[in-house]
Each structure stands twice: as C-alpha cells, then as structure tokens.
Length: 439
Ligand code: 5CA
Image (tube, rainbow, N blue to C red):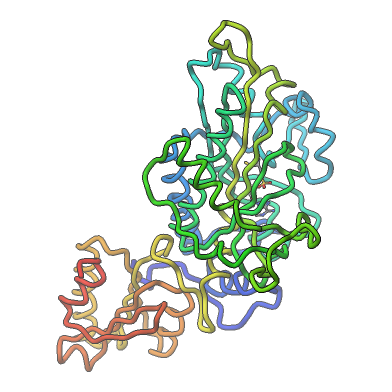
C-alpha cells in the first residue's frame, strides 16, 4: 500500500481527551475516531489490527472445536423476559422499540439467543458436546465509558457457548476454552494471567478472568510471581486429563483481583506475592442450567429421559485487546506491534521522494516485497525524512526499510527492527529475504 493513496490521519500532538497511553497512541496513529461517548469508528489502520486479532481468536476457537455462527446485534426483549434478565440488566441495556411497537434490545451478550437456537434444533445427547461462538458487536450503556475502546459502550466481543449433558462434560468444555485462551493470548504476544473471578450478571459458580498486566489496568491484581514463568501449552489438542492437568497447574498458584483477594486467606510469602494492575481481556463462566432450565433447553439422554443441558460461556474482548496489546507493547516513540497482529509487516521509507533514482529503487523494492507476499506500507510521500521516521515509529510496524540517495548508489537498504531498534545495512536481496522471513 502506498501511503500517498492511504488514509492515515495521524496527529502530531497528544489529544487532550486521552488519559492512557493506548488511547493516546490509537488516536495519534489514526486508528480510530470517536463517534459519541464510548462509540468509535475504526479507520483503515485500526481496522486491519482489529481484523488480525479477530483472526487469531477465530483460529484458536476453531482449533478448540468451537463452531462459528453469527447472531444478530438486535434481540427481541421477549427472550430476555424468559430468562428474567430483561429487568435485571437495568440501565446498561440499550432498549429499542421498533415501528410495530415491539420491544427489542441491542445485545450486551448472547446467552438467551444461543439457548434459543440450541433448543430449536438439538434434541439428543448424541449431538453433544456442542460449542457455538460468534464475533459480534455488543452494546453496554456503561455509566463511565473511558480509555477509548478499552471501556467502550459499543465493543467487539468473541463469545462462545458450550452445551453438555452433565457437569463432567461441561468441565471438559470449560478446561478446553481455558487452554485455548492461554494459546490465544500467547499468540497475540501477551502474558495473560487467569484469576478466579466473580460471575456478576452472567451468573454461575465457576469463573476465571484473564488479565494482562498494565499500569493503567482497571483492577488491582495479586498473584504468585511464578505464574508469569509458566509455559504456554502448545500442542494442537489435549485429552480431558491433560486439559485438567494444565488448568490445575495454572490455577495452582495464588491469583486474585481486588474484589476476590483476601489478605488473611492468602498464604503466599510476601516476597513471592506481586501486586500490579491488570486489564481484563477474557472471562469464562460455567453456569450449569441457569439458562437451559428456565428456557427449556433439554435433550433426550442415553436412557431416553429429558436432560437439561449444562452450559458455559466464554468471552474475549476483541476490540479491548487492541488497547491491551498497545499498553503492553509501546515505547516513547509509539506502538510496537507483535507480528501476529501488525497492520503491515513492514514500512518502506523513501528518503527522497521525487528524486528519480530513489523513486526507482524504492518502487522496485516495493514490487519485490509485494511479490514475496510481504504486507508493506510504502511512504512515497514528499514529507521530510524526520517526519517519515517519526510516523513509522508511531504506527509501530515490526520492520522498517529505508532507501535514500546514499544507499541507492551502493545498492543498500537499511533495515530497522522496531522492537529492538537494531539497524542493519543489507543488499536489497538480503533485505527481501529477511522481510519475507526466509532468513
Ligand atoms: N457472556 C459472557 C461471556 S461470553 C460475557 O459477556 N462476559 S464479560 O461480561 O466478561 O465480557 C467478556 C469480555 O468482553 C470481557 O472480558 C472484556 O474483555 C470485554 N468487555 C466487557 N465489557 C467491555 C467494554 N465495555 N468495552 C470493551 N470490552 C469489554
């Protein structure tokens, strides 16, 4: 992509409304634009990152055996009356009346909707276990939307819902998602810690939050320091016993957010207990028959008798993760994207646009990168060199390739690694090999 053709409305100054670094950098890097409180448009660069995160989340859900569906954003109020949550949800729910005076709502979550799908089509234990997920916009009329997309009113969530015959099956489904989450966050370049959590309006008795450490996180967390050095599971699939062993290992260390932390009950030695702040990027719940019972989601069991299914739900804050990753990975100059989610793998800087030999060398190198399948943003504009470097650092592409009059003469491309700052001068061919990941 040529920058001269792109839409990248970067800002030189820090926007006043942004209190935390990720919000500031997302606005400065031209990723988002506020529409109204807690509601944002995603501009091209932001949209690419959002898509990439969504794709990693999707691949790990698919790999874990969950099936992707897409449920609507607008739901009928009647479904929520059945579960009893229409009144309970209170002011956070955005209620809408259609032209026929039917009451609707913009979904804050989808337990009722998915239970309705399940009860309409699944009749036998033979169709279990089943896990259905979607990646869809949610709306919660938060009292205090803040920190940009971190606590939005409209936000993108991956929510999965598992259906099992009994608690033992549901526990395997829960563990399966727990392990999928560890893999997902690791692929996003994050160290996520699972904490035992309160269940809030979703309900149920078994729940974990996954938090990413960041000074700007909304909750205070307390955890055993060894949790951070546990290895992420990497096998494609695990047996039920293996899943349980992994979950036991990760939950064997003390870890709690402020609402669950009990200093008196915490037996971790003071030297081993770390207190930091964290951002909740995922939350999983086992709530058994809370919705299936009241909404009549049953299947015929092996003996022919009706069994109320046991359910869980599993959320990931896809749009929040954009901010979470920036909080975890930035420096004074801007964002440092992990390759797995970077909007482009590399930036190409033409130090002297308009100078024929420079333009020619850059155009040629750009063509080769494209030919090798490297996603590249080519700064072919007439800006000053300093501005171009600052912009590339700000938007945080993992690699920067620079070609200027000096390099053109000697056939040299300067390559910079954004994360380490390390620079090397390479021949165009070697630079191509490096950016194409072949060396
Ligand atoms: N139904 C369950 C799981 S599918 C559920 O709604 N869980 S949740 O309320 O914990 O939300 C799941 C995830 O969505 C959270 O872990 C968080 O990462 C993200 N999230 C929740 N509220 C917001 C918000 N206002 N802005 C951005 N992300 C949010």
